[in-house]
Length: 141
Image (cartoon, rainbow, N blue to C red; front, side, top):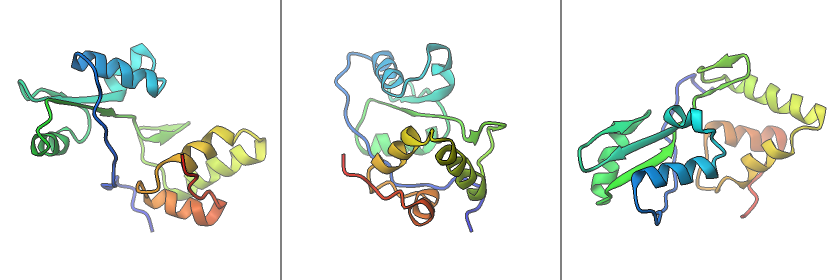
């Protein structure tokens, strides 16, 4: 059973060649198609110079960043939830129902590609079950 609590999962990271943390935030927002008005809520950040941060998991990420001698970190800080239940980590049954509704309507291509193209090292409990229930196995990118 998947608890209704976020768990830590393997994440991947990469260095960015940018001149400032603001430029890194803008680059991540562009990559993730985050609208300008949502950047303050949807991108987390931490800065070594003054220890300032914003976003879920900031303390954990700050400790990791210090151990890796990084000056700053930016990450996607998207809220959990499905339409109709924002800010709530959905139960797996709701996630599966959502994807099955997308499949039934023929609108699942983007969602399926997103799940299947996520690097195989990032194995969440939902993804494990989606592989079994929908046969959405990883696609090498």
